[in-house]
Every structure is written in C-alpha cells, then in structure tokens.
Image 1 (cartoon, rainbow, N blue to C red):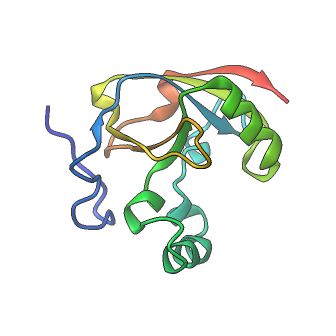
Image 2 (cartoon, one colour; image 1 turned 45 degrees about the vertical axis):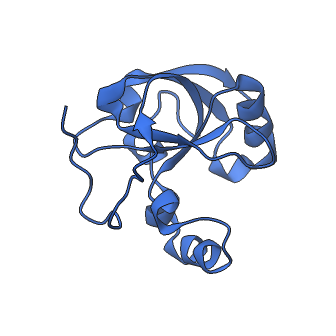
Image 3 (cartoon, rainbow, N blue to C red; image 1 turned 30 degrees about the vertical axis):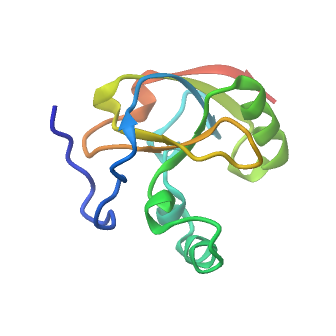
Amino acid sequence: MTLRWPPDFPEDCPPEEASPANGIYYYIVKNDPPQWTDFTALYRRNRRLAEARIRQGITTACQTMGLSVLADINDALDRANQFRSIGNIVARLMLTPDAGRILYTPRDNDSHHTWWVPEGYNPGDTATIVLEL
C-alpha cells in the first residue's frame, strides 16, 4: 500500500522508524461527532507555536505535522483535563495501515504517539466518542 503525504510535510516525514498505524488510540477533540477541523496538526493550527517548540528542541518539524494520540485511555483523560484548550472530549480511534504511520513519542513516560495522516484519509471516520469531560 502506497500512501501519499501532504505536500507541506518535511522531507523524510513521516520518519523511517514510524510503523503502519494499527490498533486503538485515543485523541482529544472539541466536537461530538468529531469534525475534520478536530484533526489539525499543530503546525497547521498554530505555526508560531510549532516553530517555537522546534527552535527550543521540544519537538521536530515532522512531529508538528502529525497528530498526538495516546494508547492509554487514562493518559488521554489526563491530557484532556490538563489542556482544555485542545478539547474536552476523548475519542477512540480504530487505526489500520491505511490510516498512515505512527511512532511512539512519549512525553513524561506516557503513551503518547505521533500519527501522520495521509492525504485523502478522514480520521473522523474511525472516531467514536468515549467520554466528555
């Protein structure tokens, strides 16, 4: 299966070590049901913040093009409580290889993964609301 990446992705993004997406992950959204706008990468949502984090060495340009998903529902609940500005609804995603590539990118030993979504894939198609805080 050949996936096409958005043209604004940096070269070699997603990284070679990223695996085909597969499994259940959790994602914080603002809408029920989730809308396309809920699935916007940091770089597209807030370019100034993304570039500042890249300069500070907190993240990479490639990671800012991916979506932050969590493998553990408790981590997702913690994230939703901590960052209300990104949303207060936890959605469960059932990802398969056609959903893109994914890489374990923990923050403080959590289950954080970066998920790169290919062109033409609608993340909302696999999203189910689990909990609204």
